[in-house]
Amino acid sequence: MPSYKHYSFDLWLTLIKSNPAFKAERARYFHANFNAAGKSPEEVSAIFRKVDLMVNAINERTGKNIDAEEMYLMVISVINDYSTAFQDIDIDELYDRMEDLLLENMPLVYCPDSMGILQKLRDCGTCSMSLLSNTGFIKGKTLRKILSHLELDKLLDFQLYSDEVRMSKPNLKFFQLMLDTIDRNKHVELELHEIIHVGDNPLADVKGAEAIGIKSQLINSNHLTISSLLL
Image (cartoon, rainbow, N blue to C red):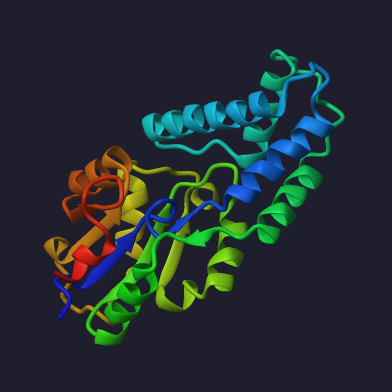
């Protein structure tokens, strides 16, 4: 039997991971189309990583959300030695192109045990599950398509994404939204100690969960895997 009545999960590096082919194709596209400064493909890839880390840190610090389009413009600016001459870029078209690339190079389920563990939790009939995810270059609307393709959506009661609600973990209001969204008809008397948030990030996932008073479990970035939830 599961130890908790509700399981909240992080997404990236918890349930899924990037397909390396997507990042390679993305860097190739920016190298070919937004590279007046003549950066190498390797430099473009490194810039994507730096912007990703910077924005993640900002979002975690402020509890707010920097949009994907803004992140892509940051990348273009840095590639071109911090130029701001991107007024003619159609950012909606650019995002659509990135989404197409992603769907052509689908993310992968994090590990072979992931689906099986989630299915066992679902099959027990006594607990509910949800997703609480910070987003970056990829929006929630795109991630919903990915989870549908991977059939992860069938195992979740609801999905919450930072870009859709303008809040990022470890913002307590984001965690509170998760608590408020749990179906209380399934859990008439649900106590905080009966809820756990599972993720790979010690700050966004663990400290955020503990600050609001629910349990937490760090996986994948330490010695534990998702299988530890059934031990």
